[in-house]
Image 1 (cartoon, rainbow, N blue to C red):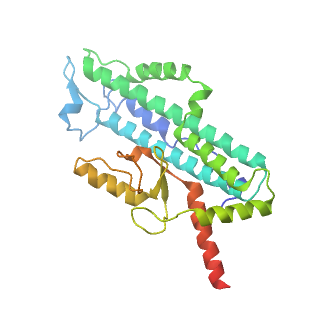
Image 2 (image 1 turned 45 degrees about the vertical axis):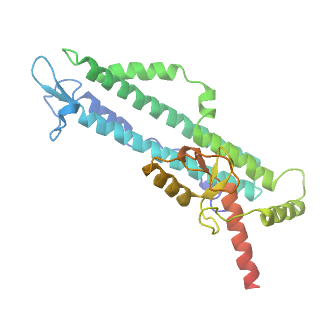
Image 3 (image 1 turned 90 degrees about the vertical axis):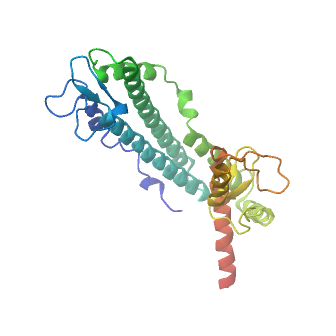
Length: 284
């Protein structure tokens, strides 16, 4: 097991989010309320001139929003780590309660991700509205955005969290892992079944023709490829303005997209396990 349950780190608060949002209240001293009058903002398409003279720049606000989006990547990374820990727990036949704790952590992350998404969307809609309407007097951007944010938050439901992409992946992979290692069979029967399954599986990528290291599954047709290989194929064909046919022989799927691909952690673990078994056999 790579990480014991008691070492799993709970979700950390989004770093610097409040400080970044305070940029929306104004730049340096003397700036008009709600403006970000920072030097070096020369993008005219992102400025507009108010009736009383000053030119308002939204570049600093856009930068703050970009930073908040980067914070979402930390949340997603945390969800990936939590998924790995949960799978380790299942694989090692640990207490079900510990696995359930990992699911609670995933839901906490999903809640943070939803709230941050609402923050970002509320401010983006507010800024776009001001840019579009160009009012004579610039309103309080933060208050306007807060109203939009609270409106979005008031419509929250538990089902939203269940639809989080990372959480859905967590549940799917957990289900498959439990199917592999649990059930009503004895441990001996499980080991035998897994050995048979591995011998029947083809770990060779249909593109590279070598054993996969980072397998991804196509959600549409179910076939598995090496991640870098299929993404390179998609990019190459995109430049030629052509669609990508599934490289698995006999597959009728003719439009493989990057958004259709999900990492298959269970398959990767089976590949890694087979490698270890092979090395173990060689050592003996």
